[in-house]
Length: 151
Image 1 (cartoon, one colour):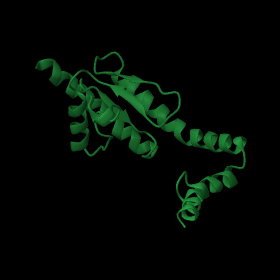
Image 2 (cartoon, helix red, strand yellow):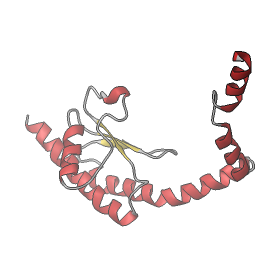
Image 3 (tube, one colour):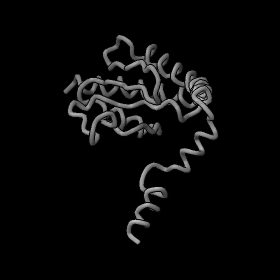
Image 4 (cartoon, one colour):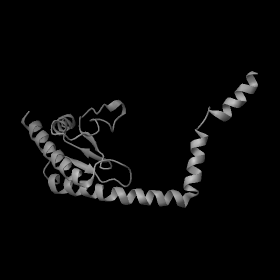
């Protein structure tokens, strides 16, 4: 009985979700199906990422309030603020109604020893809301940077 049950369980549930894998194979059919889906996803996300990067460039480039990584794929833009500013930027954004991923999300256990890193996720909000959210974010980054200089 034990050997029979072990054999049944191995095929049923101990492993990857085989039914879900089958659904994906049937939906995508082949590697080109996956590529077509990723191209459509990129077309949806590109304007949002372009908007965020454009605002960061126009509002923060050269002003000493941090830098960012221009991603080559993925769902996030990594913002690297001045030391000790990430939590304050997050707090200011939250107080203004802009929700972001938690500070330190780029680090294991959310422990960013320098309190510098934030993830910007442009994929969720519509482009018009992204404009406002990024204006708030850039203002918060400038405020937090100025506050850090005064300490």
